[in-house]
Image 1 (spheres, rainbow, N blue to C red):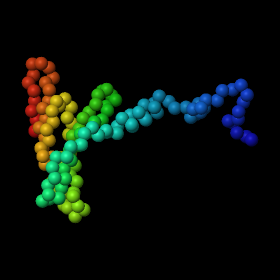
Image 2 (cartoon, rainbow, N blue to C red):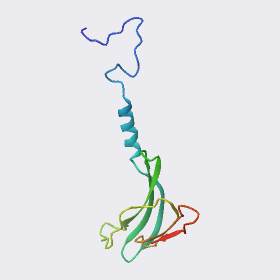
Image 3 (tube, one colour):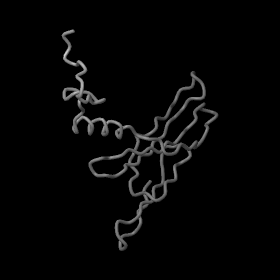
Image 4 (cartoon, rainbow, N blue to C red):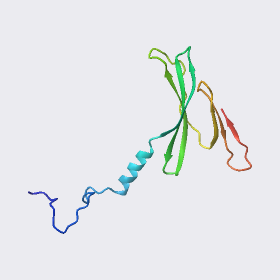
Length: 131
């Protein structure tokens, strides 16, 4: 009977716990930042199936929230999926690259390249084409 958490008549017990277990603003922010660090998949596009090599290419568009700048970062990456377990992937896909400010993205069928059209920052600048 030597516990300190005894029920006292007339005293309200918080369902969250006492002062020792109460969450702080710092821990809430850390949990929120950890959840927002997980990227979300926006779109998955099948680009091609190379029968002779036994490889199926998939382009994946992901996004991730950046809490410090209050913006969303967008990435594009290519994944090579072998048709069988014995297939050998001869070309490696490029690393994911950021596609912020892009108005149109047209991936190359093999997934190695992509055409990105970026909008101008202001009305006087021309539009950018990137490969």
